[in-house]
Image (cartoon, rainbow, N blue to C red; front, top):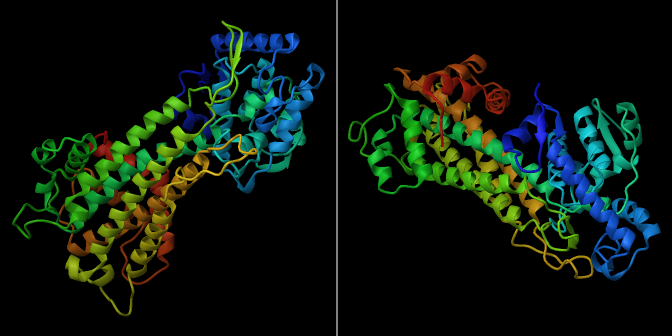
Length: 509
């Protein structure tokens, strides 16, 4: 298994996924090692010369005007970590913790943070050997970066806190010992460099963006199946329409759905059954497309952030300066993660409306709630009910976090981003969207059976057949949550996208 080489400049979201989910190992490039060593030498000179540099020879936040002696710089850094580890809530998932560690390593590797190479290597060893700090998901204001979560990341490096190792949660010291990794002692600048940054919010957001890109493909598959289940009018997908309003996502969506519906005998042309469909079908290119454009924009911003230096102060070896700035401020990510949540929520909104049209006999012309023996059986009645609940929850979660700010540190940190809250909300919305799409896909397959499967498209046929491998047609009521779980599983593990793209070509947007 090839390693991900850490340069500080070339990490991609795909690399993040490979390290977080596939446990691909990482190592520093030779150039990164040189840059780290240069930066560290400059910090040592600051301390030796007694220069006043924030966080190196001074206290933090409101205590920036308190001078720290050379002899106390090590204690200063350890005190910073233990005092800032005040996270709340349940722990982050392991994949997010791995992302936090990876992104912190990549940022430090650029060579502007003044951390010892041995300290960065300790974090790399933890990542490669699977020592995962227990990091509570709540407690960050998103500036000065993700202070509380990142402090919990550092605790096991000092033999403190808790960590998960080989599936077991234990003390940080025990986990490090079992993995054969030495405990470290922080020195000047290191504690601040390890925790002052946006890596918690960006880890959550990067993995959510990756999942969102795949969910947009699933949304197109679900919409195409619903087109067939409702004998949808494909004229609305005509490229000539979309070229007259040339948003890329809109054009791509119309092309993709036509690509999936190629050779289908279940769709119709304008005037054959009806002149036009309701918006939930007719406006799929406009709605899905807008979310695709948003997510592509967000991905671009995230890939800038994962290759950025976000601590403070920044050390410039060429001019021997330590400059205090605000790169830790999470606002660039807070805004895009709020946008991500909104873009995803709209996908569930329109999916639930397509689902409603499938189960409502006044709209579908099919048996009520997609079951032939209605009354005795409730069929898909409460599937739509549950989808509506998830969509409603998304509307609450989509309220932006980034418009809020509560001053901290005696008003020294008087504007904060709430970016980690924005990222966590976007991730929760993503999970709800995935569930709603699973419900729509399952209902669309049931409707196709009830309509009489006259031949599906080159892309929808493999999707339908895959669903039917796991979920039988509903004849009589049964616990449908198990079927929905199976449909969600084939979304999560990528099987449905693979089956469709193998048959109909890649769904590029």
